[in-house]
Amino acid sequence: MLLSCGDALVDFLPVKSVDGRDAAVPVAGGSCLNIAVGMARLGAPAGVVGGISTDLFGRMIADHARMSQVDLRYATRSEHQTTLAFVRHIGGEPQYVFYDEATASRNWVYRHGSIPFDEISKRSMSGRPHSPTTTGQLRRLR
Image: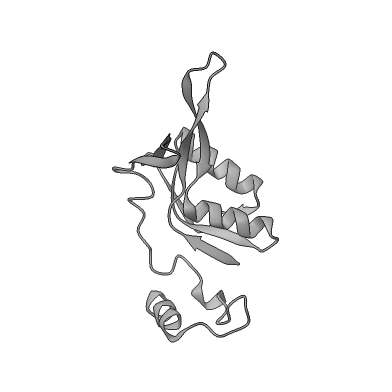
């Protein structure tokens, strides 16, 4: 299984309402979750490592992950709120505002032994051995 470690959040993407006003639509996202979803859609077993809230938005994230065949067994669910990101385009460029104080992602802490690193292959997807740095990091986490 390929594990993606980091954030899972809800992006509020800009749209126009039916009456033409600016509005936002919530979408499950975050780089970690997006990577895991992409790997799963390519047919690789994928999972997320990190904090996911049990609030309304956290349930959106979990539902999206499950529907995308992303394994959440290594994600820590908590009552901390979900990180929210608001996106606005200014001059054709996206501008982001994050609300992440006291969130599930921010409060996630690796618990020794919570991930079975012995099951992680020492070979990368390309067939080459991991770098000495990566191998050393895996040893320290075990």
